[in-house]
Length: 179
Length: 107
Image (cartoon, rainbow over all chains, first blue to last red):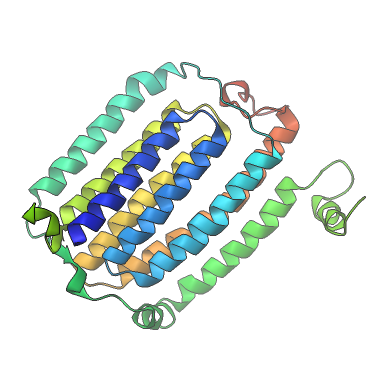
């Protein structure tokens, strides 16, 4: 049963990732990325990470991808024109990708002592996770909240108009409705 | 047919899947010519690495691997917010998303 679930959702993952590369319209790429992220949540669940599966759906497939699709529609992104790209990417990039993949695959396949995943392994409950997160790792957690705050300020300052005054004040007037 | 109903999957398969997803992300980063799609390829790479973290957390019954994935998700959310804001700013200045035409630092 585990094997079937793994094969199905790993297949969805790979198909979504390959479709992301093949599609030429950004909105199709975004939708295939959502497929990848949701099937990744199922794989997390198979590995017993229930909180991460939920967070993956909410944060990645929900928040981040909604942001992506919003920006695609906002900018009215059209089909990309295919060009050859840089010669450096062609000559160095692709051999490097193949080399990295080959090395990682060789190491993984030759590693002894990697276990197996079963459905009966039990899950890491959110309680266990938060016990460590809010005691031993409290400082990094708080620092992350500061990071998010700075990111919000940065996003507002970046995306706001810059012609009249500061971007922040201008964004505030946008929020009140028509200008 | 019996093997399809096996109760266990080797963890190396999960690791291979994560490596392949990461490589597909790199390939997308190299071949795509749209700013937003390149950004999506980066998210794909982050997801591939996250799967590795969760697999090793399962292997050693360690909670910290999962917490690391949680932090990666938070950083990815911040990165997406700032990155898409930068993309909007670039689009305002250049009126294009094709990376071939965004080749100057100054206006």
